[in-house]
Length: 276
Image (cartoon, rainbow, N blue to C red; front, side, top):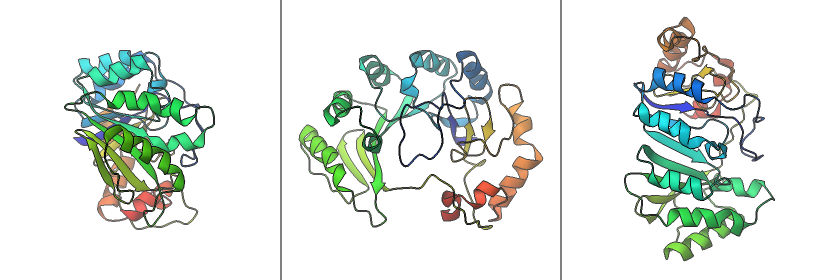
């Protein structure tokens, strides 16, 4: 069983964040019918299912329909969003859902756009956070600190708003700041999601052992970093998942990771694999 399977409901987010290198909107939205096909095949294969690789699930008007299918198959969900599409209906949906285990908001997305003011962006998020959460965790991500774990000056907007809202003092150099029960501010150095031009043959990864990815067009990939589907292992809409996972390519990749050897080109250029 995988720890996590990433299911991309769409690759559309409407933003152009500096930390996200891939072009969006190439694959489009996974239909409800195709999502149910995915749910049937994977619902017993992982502990958590994340609605994210590229794209923002809150952008989907019928997100509740996808969640109803997930609930039918007893799938425990993790939602990752920029927060830009958090309206009153999505707020209620996320707050009340009993299958969501965690919601992640990528706050640094705010700095890559000019269409909303800080108040327009963050006020709905603060209203969402006032809910009394139980059995689900809310993770506010500021993953834009430098290599010495110093935050940029622009983060002050968030620090001040959160300190005023929760009547706390935020440690700006701390990885986790608890805001209230089940709600944390998670800080991290900026990670480069692009691939290096320098190749390395040695390394390991959790791909195909602890995680698996499914793009919105059905392409099965070994991990969430392969957002362009370079390592296409098959298509879950049409192919048997067991046959995909038993294929020679999958077995070779897994054996390589176990032995500290990177076989695929993008694995050799992936900073995450290089750091593992």
